Image (cartoon, rainbow over all chains, first blue to last red; front, top):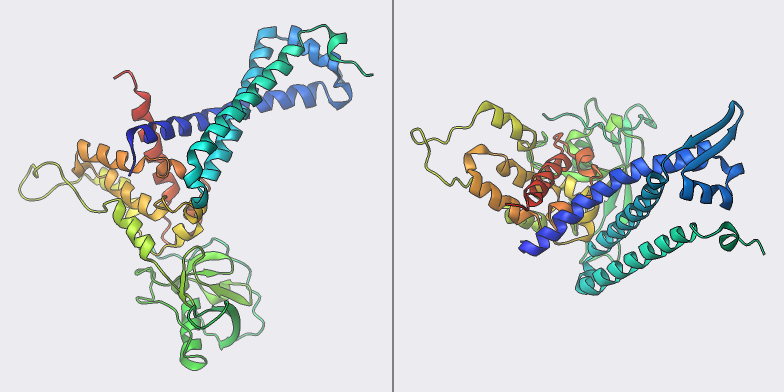
Length: 145
Length: 256
């Protein structure tokens, strides 16, 4: 019914799909808390984002006063990169599995698998490049013209 | 545990005190170009089931109506059909519980042989694939019997009631598109033997290895559709998840 390699890959895929799901719940909760509840839509700006990513400074004006959280920058950076990695893996592996459940696509399993590996890697690299761009001086990143 | 299904139960909106209207799926593949629906009205009585209504239609109005049934008491599993959008046993579903007209169709995903009767061969083949029989790897320790502890018996109690009706497999999304996926009924049956302590460790491992292909236990979407529609209250999803967790735990011990 199954080869050892096939079941090994399936087992690890199943495991990481669950690990990434838990990671997404935690990190998306953090993301929403920071970006939508503490900072608030009115205060979202490139400057605020750079401040958060480079210094870990999270600020927001509320009716009850200003909320300021100064967390270690590497924690915020790690959460951002983890969120990127978990999203890409969870989403792409999920779509790949759905496709592999279709009998008519099974003959193309290998090309589809390699496409998803390359596409996922490209998405992750693209995300990292955007992330790194925030470490450049603000005026080089955000140019309204 | 032949209980009335709560899944999909709707408020009764009987058009008249003693009559029920049924929209029944009709199709004879050799004769009809495509399926159609026929509407029947039947006199109801207290405690009337959908199967009672179908038999009444066949006896009194249309002898060509075909429905598979046998025990009429939710034991044989032969009359699983799709009633008002949910997989149910016709003999275990009260007419008075359903909104009308009552739509009765064959089990989705299975090929129709005629009217409400579907082809179950693939389902039975999948049940066979998981080797649903006792395979001890040692002689009985006392006398001629393999003794099972009450605790172990209790563990597999939940899946022992399966009547092979196919309702779960019909409701399962991966089973609908992936012909290599054995389906929830077969995997729950495998779980019944996997958890049986009398089979021995080696057989248990072999069973698990047999089930853990990319189109085996890991294919379950954890949607609990099968659990919702099971007329016997079995949760194949939980059985599959337990086997998946065990299989992954085995794999995670990569340092051995």
